[in-house]
Image (tube, rainbow, N blue to C red; front, side):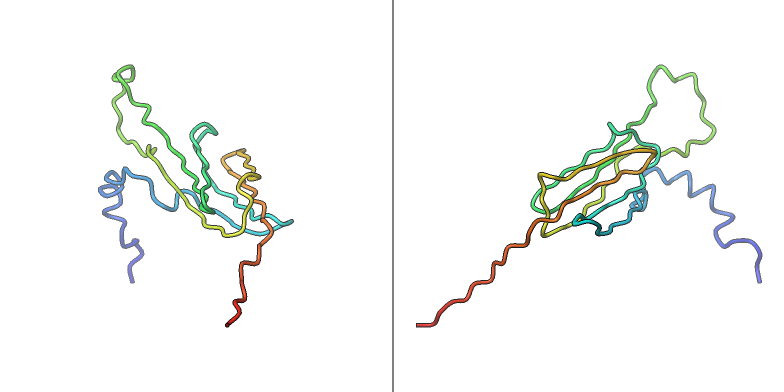
Length: 131
């Protein structure tokens, strides 16, 4: 029995190579309440201006992008380790019965809350007579 975790020795080597955001950076909860679909996404470390929400044909996309703050003005910094990741993360959700024009969103304390009103489902089933 070993008391040292399996990846203990290689953690520092491989963590330096991880420069792209992981898909699980935007954890979410999706639930129904009061005639709405509700999505709550954890997006810590981003500002409201970094987040874009789009909806087309029932597909809701949430994209958060953080630009690298490194520039010539910061050349005097000699980083020992950089763990803050810069880049873009996206989550998409598919709905069939929503009112795209009435979607509301709020971002506070690193949590994005989206309320998506359900639309009345129109019966599209047709009965065809046989001649």
